Amino acid sequence: MADDAVPREDEPLAGWLDRIERDARLTESARWRERDEVLDQLDGWRTAVDASGDRTLPQRFDVLEARLQAVDHALHGAVRESIRRGSGRDALLGLVRAGTTPGVGQAPSSDRYDALDALIGGVLDLAPGEKGLQPLGKDMVFYQPTPARHIFDSLEQLRLGSDDVLIDLGAGLGHMPLLAAICTPARCIGIEWQAVYVVAARARAADLGLDRAAFVQGDLCEADLGGGTVFYLYTPVSGALLRRVLDRLRGEAERRPIRLCTLGPCTEVVAGEAWLRAEGPCDRHRPVVFRSR
Ligand SMILES: C[S@@+](CC[C@H](N)C(=O)[O-])C[C@H]1O[C@@H](n2cnc3c(N)ncnc32)[C@H](O)[C@@H]1O
Image 1: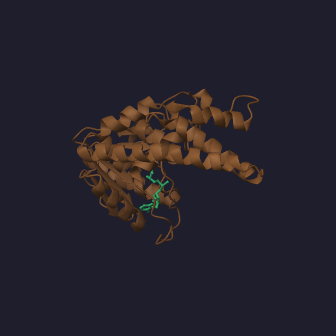
Image 2: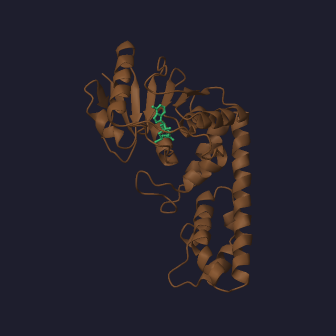
Image 3: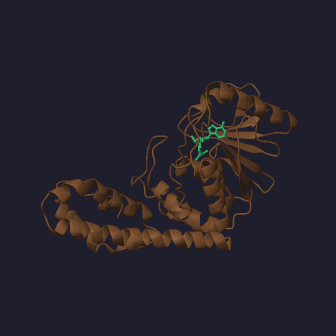
């Protein structure tokens, strides 16, 4: 199925469409990666098909697209129900494993998004829009969610326990704390500058019954970091602001052992901190876990 989702070499578009329309496997819920690939193909061909003058192709595109989106929609709703019942971890991880067909829709580079982001985006359904956003100050990094595969990779590396308190520094819409609260027994907190993101994350946590996930509006240079055992940084700040946040974290590490999990350009800076040691290779394209000395 994996290779079938994309047109074969020299296959005419109509032939590919015939094949995809007949393929009942695409409506199996676990085939979310293949559906994402087909939806991408439809999207990519859309302009050419609409401009082609052909009367039936655009209609067939619409029908197929609606059919596949309906399967995804039902799947996202079913996963949300499992989370509310307390079995979200198994539902989500089962799906993630079932959908890891090599080569289909998997983004190679560190900040690209792939089919897993579409799945998680559909389940968490977090989209507050741009209205009400506050201007960012110097060295504050704009919102970009961690690609979902890196969140699962981080959780795998961190192995959070029930005594852990994960704090996402600059949590955005809260993907990391929400998924960590679903998949681990830890308490999870997101600190975020943008109030609209905090409101959206809180609403989703309440809707999913995630009482171990909390969201605080605040500035990383002032917010309470006490109690955190693991701090997640998807490069929320840079330059002098990153320096101030790292100094605050070093202060926390003087009171108790802590871990940092970093992704993106901040990893290089964090790797230079003498009070931390990396638990693995410092790869800028993967989450890296550091432990205080
Ligand atoms: C690159 S995004 C990371 C989002 C989230 N951690 C994730 O991985 O999905 C950086 C986030 O940090 C927030 N941010 C930047 N400076 C901040 C500050 N001084 N205090 C709190 N949040 C800040 C931004 O609003 C943005 O949502």
